[in-house]
Length: 447
Image (cartoon, rainbow, N blue to C red; front, side):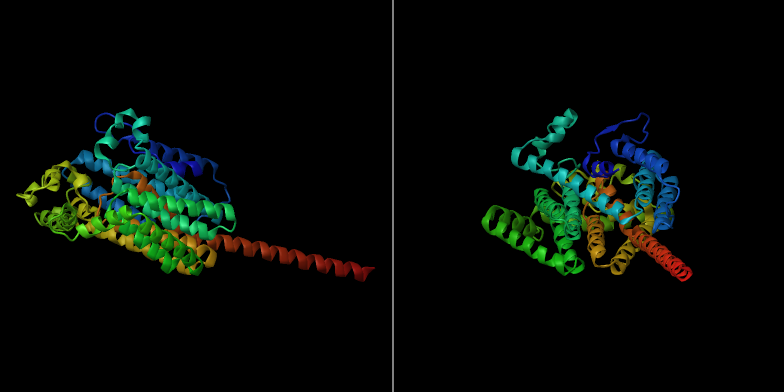
């Protein structure tokens, strides 16, 4: 099972079997999820603890809103595919994780497996960066040449920005595990993975993941505890040393960041474009009451011609406006136009409920478990932030997010169950001791 979870965040989406007649694709990720779910159901113990799955009602409500948008949508084929994707990649996967996590050791193993999978992605990204070796093109010849043409570092992910966010989400997890482990060897491994993930985040050459990484480190400073803050001070010193010794790195970061506010630069236009998408989505929803409530259907933005909103604008952004969801670099605005106000509000409600659950579980946890809960909460917040400036079309990133949501949401129930079992065992042990002492006293009196 641990290998399955590592592969879900590592394997590329292009490993799939394309089915005919517009049917949903049979990807390697979906095959792994179904196999893992069947294996888990078949081998689960009869005495396992059952409890309500936190946030499951909101997950299902958001899924139902997508189904309603699909029924009333403009593209039934794409709508059906997206509803199927949600059923497998979110609902079934969420149930799988919630079923798997039954003890503290389970979610520690799962988090470790996720970090190892992300570290493997970072290794591939480093190979692309320093050796110009396209491993994905070498393994899958159909993808050969993409790396040489674009020059972007994406590793096994479909886009460099999505790679950057996956790496940024992994940093608080590896830091939390490093602070959690008592043994020196696993702790050092996690610190090494942390540095590798930070480097891979830089390789994405995108402002969004860089800011997400900064927010993640700041979140761990606030929530991670005093012990972790000392380690983060070392990371800060190491980062400062790299910036001083490598002026090229420093100049790259500063140029990309400052170009955001230079109105004549392409980076400023892409930044402003993400804000414009809100107005475009709102204008399209106001055309009819049905669209206002239920939108145009899941996946409908892939075939919508909205080029008139950028008429007369120069540059690459106006040219790719017909290319579909890859131009919707604001997932929230894309969900608004596809699912309408009902679906959009349910999505916000779901994310707010998840955030509340994670923060409350962090507050309830003891000092050892609190750092892990902090890592989970911060990583999830990075994902929610990423949706403001990119469209999440990498299933690996979705699996990473929903795995963390399921682990973090069930954490308090797992710990309560574990504490209850320990209390019961202690009570039984105490009863046996009292009974044994009483028997001994009775025997001595008889003698």
